[in-house]
Amino acid sequence: MSQARIDTVLKLFQDAGHLTVEPPILQPANTFLDLTGEDIRRRLFLTSGPDGSDLCLRPDFTIPVCRQHLERGDAGRRADYCYSGPVFRQRAQGSGEIPQLGAESLGRDDRDEADADMLGLAVAALDVFDIRDRNILIGDETLFASVLSGLDLPAVWQRRLRDLFGETDKLSAAIGRMAGTDQSSDDTRDVRLGFLAALEGADPEAAHAVVEDLLSIAGISAVGGRTPSEIADRFLEQAALANGSGNHARAAEVLKSFLAIRGNAADSLSELQTFASNTGLDLNDAIAGYRNRLEAIRAKGIDPANLTFAADFGRRLDYYTGFVFEIHSKNAEAGGQLVGGGRYDRLLKLLGAGTEVPAIGFSIWLDRIAEISGRSQ
Image (tube, rainbow, N blue to C red; front, top):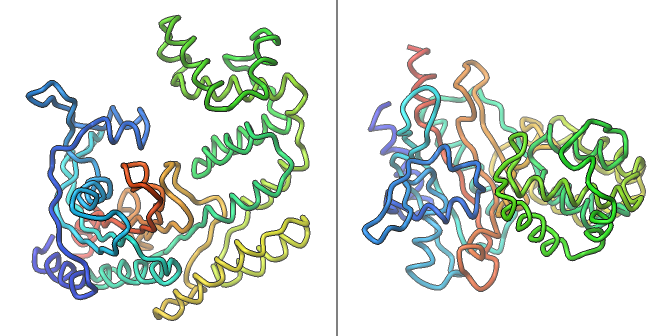
């Protein structure tokens, strides 16, 4: 990978107003475990500090950049950052030290323009690396959340389905269970109905804590590969089913129909409007937000007809909100996305800010770009 091109991209970011930062490589491990889940533990490079605290080599830049932002001033201030350096993740093949470039934009209230700016900046960066034959995939969790809130579903199902958005297979399986069509066996099938009935209607967080505590007392850390948190979610699902609130066939069909929407972003706008009309759901605000973002993207010289919208595309992390995007190469198998980005308005509050702060960013996987460049030579 040419350092000259990396420097050119950094200059591109800086000219767009982004300050270059270098957050520490050593980070508190619990921050990543709390925000991204225990599944990431097996991919972290872990160590201990002098005081016995759990530390890790940074597995990404977004969280460290946001932590540094909070340490240096008011959380809600406008600030744009860029970075270049390694992240560290355990991988089955290849080095666990992965070079990345990226940019973050915090505190902008003009969300549509910020979304368009960051997508445009990512595209311009790939131009520097001569990667012009690409597929750009976009999604919008706001649309899914609006569809979900318009359906007459118990709180346990709304929370569960929203938590699974972005993991297509798991989301599809949960929708099947909600509709009463998935009869596969699981670890909750034989639980006494009295216990399930007691959980149904309880505060979801409190019920979740009760189940996790019971598993902890029993010394159970996993069942069939499921974590205590996942087992607790299945208990709550079964509680809803046991009380007769699990047969939501129409809602399931509506969700399946929505999640199947996929195509070029310009055409998807009319598809979403037709879907709303056919189902009777009030999606006016969500669709208007989607339309405004596409117009802002078009104003940056990117034709929405050249973007692929997928209604089921999202990221299963609590802090991601709204717009997400990925860029892939059309002509080479690079082992995944070249660029991944999205809006994460909840992250700074989860890190300690008093309120949510508008935020969006992206990272470029330089190892995959180097692989493509090597094949083209």
